[in-house]
Image (cartoon, rainbow, N blue to C red; front, side, top):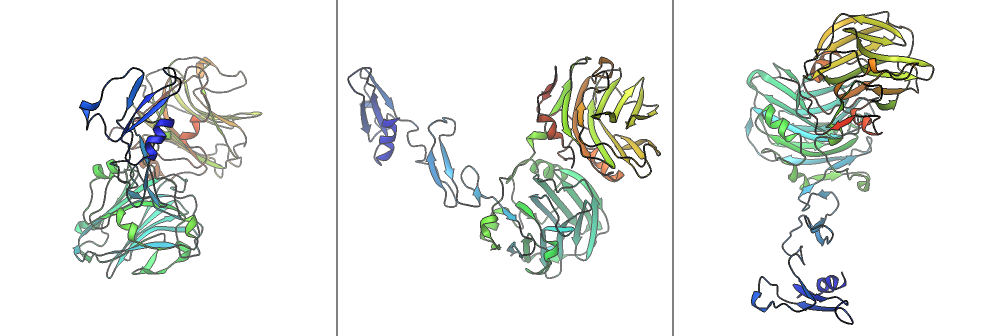
Amino acid sequence: MECTLTCLRHAQCESFNYQDNSVGTRHVCELNDQTRLTRSRDLLQRNGFSYYGTGMKPCLNVICQNGGTCHPVFDNMAVPYCCQCKQRYGGRHCEHIMGFRFTNSSSGDHVSIPVGENIETVSLTVCVRFKASQVKHGISSPVSYVTGDFNAVLQLHANRTIRIYIKDQYSDFPYVSLLDNTWHHVCSTWETVGGNLSLYIDGLLIGQKQGVHPGITFNSSGTFVIGQLQKTIGGQFLLNESFLGDVTDVNIWKDVLTQSIIEERSRECYSHVGDLLDWPAFSTGSLQFYKEVNSFPSECSGFDPSTNYDLEFPRRTDEDYVYGPTLPALSAFTVSFFVSFADNGDKTFFNYFAKGALNEIFIHERNKYFTVRIRRVARQHDFNIPPDGLWHHVVVTWENINGTYEIFVNGQTMETGDGLQNGTNIKAGGTVVLGNDKDSFGFQKRDAYVGKISRVNLWDYVLPRETIALLSQHCGKENGEIIAWRDFRAGPPHGEVYIREPSSCHRPQ
């Protein structure tokens, strides 16, 4: 190591010969200004000496962009260097601007950049990645694009609605909350033919609207702003609708991207650039931050690997189960999960128990009847999930005002009812378990689940039917606000339970 450092300190050193002290009385370090590639005839074998040359200066032909500096890494032969990037830049060679963090909704913090092309436009695709955890005033505006005769705005509403403005007309899309402190990829497309407007989240088509300003064209020259809603070109911000969180990877195309392209590009950050406005252009944008030191975001991530797995329970036994998180008191809930199995026996899909309160939430099949138990009270229904080895989406909702519950399979309502433990709350402080039912006798072989389960999420409210239908179409990366699928990786499974990666969960289209 000492000889290596000596060579690195000398600008002319390209290789060295080394003899350790096991051969002589001391080690010998000979520096060379050539390598065996440039002067192969001069490389002669000598007893006790070793030659070191290739890769001695891994930064010699490496260009770190945007002011980054290269540093050798001697303990990694696969990647023997790293680029130390300046603030706000990332990537292996500091090739991309990382993005912006907005922490103060009353300061007018924003990033703006002109959209300089002066062309008549008849279609548009806007894509952005963001990570957010709150809406301070009920409305949040990650991005807005305004020209002399057109505007396009993306807004998040605290009521879990996504609103898109096209000129003076807005369209609302209900969906599970995106305020979960997780990176999401959101794209909207619009075209003048038919006024077709589409919204995609993490590659999944969330909804479509027709008749949104059909037949119009607009001049593309204007201003794009991150972090604020602009009422005029580059100005008149509405601070109570400003964005809180991280934003990166913003691109605009003057065409409508296809669903397959959007899905592919949702999986990896910085994998594409727009032809009307591309993300690298924001390195020259105008920045205004009350405290710029707080404006540097976390590293962007594409598809969340912590959700890309399934749990497999391979046998019928009382020994195999997985504990999940504890729950708060609940006056309503939505439980959503995907299952795949070929076993014909009884099975437990989801169980929540608390001290002195078993079967607070118990979703299972017994004797071919699909059963929902709330605080020990059961409602049985004469249907079951097909044991065909395919993936099926199951959702159960409940609220305590009228005791109303609903069971969905693959986006369709199978059963509904009311009067189920109305006026009571699900007890706090208990534990969720997958794979079996915890009752007064412990775990029993009869109640074991045999098969695969994935994307178990729980919300403390009843999701709209439209949202449930959307969730059923795709094994996605949605996160429940009370329980998220990634939570089940926190502790080791009990018994013979396998974590299968990547997930095989797939719904036929």
